[in-house]
Image (cartoon, rainbow, N blue to C red):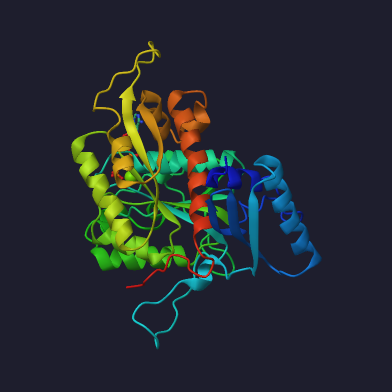
Length: 373
Ligand SMILES: Nc1ncnc2c1ncn2[C@@H]1O[C@H](COP(=O)(O)OP(=O)(O)OP(=O)(O)O)[C@@H](O)[C@H]1O
Ligand SMILES: [Mg+2]
């Protein structure tokens, strides 16, 4: 059966000869539509009309016929490569204003991890997701935007580290467990930041994200502070976001806040690429066959279905998750066989899928429009 997923899966088999990655991963497939035995999409290339472009086009049709069936009607439109992510950051308020400095030119996808309620495991999910993606071979960065309670430095064993500044006066992120990390915790004293108000936080984040030597990244994950207030809204408007992941525990209070999270991103036209249920159930270390639903399992999954957003997976409560976070080696790395690590791996895979779907749906000329305040 021709589904969007099946078509993307087939197209992933086509590697770009020079760039060593498949065409879906390189965001070359846009405007994908699949219905009634027909698949149409735009193939975005640096130079359409060349012999190379024709070869890629032929390869797409061939692979789709092989993988899905000869009867599939394949329609491919060619387009030239869009300007990169950083180039189309809009400036609000119409003409006349100067364009702000454009951060993140070499970053393909930016994903914010958020929740309404505090303490539900955003930082844990963000950290493990970043490591899981890096282990799958992606180039990944992780930014901790929580000025009041940064936790990424500790989770990566880099507390007290100070990133260096290169000759172009850019901040150089710190590498840990295959991920380039940067934290407000490296830059500001949390005790001093407690009295900062929204606009100050926003300015700090803008400045902080604007001049970082990320290099080329396929995913930049943003760990947001808890809540859906002004601070979060300003941060998500500071950079162009590909999508958001909402983390919730199964309890009703957390779920009602998760709902607000999805609504907040909708307000700024950022799609929720998925929801994660953290602390979904408890399995005692000595009885791995038992699963206890402490908070009422499945709530986040139901909410995802109700709001029509993808569900990425459920992570059990495991002592190891907390211990390894405190010790600076996320569970995906330290206990890859544990149920929680497996859950994070799956969440990573589904995130990649959903981001690809989201990118394939978007018109190349219409990236999420970001309005600066
Ligand atoms: N699945 C889990 N199993 C066991 N402990 C967990 C799990 N997820 C998170 N924790 C622990 O719960 C605490 C809160 O998690 P975390 O810091 O990730 O939440 P947060 O949503 O980022 O919090 P904040 O709102 O303060 O930013 C941490 O001590 C963390 O180690
Ligand atoms: Mg946190």
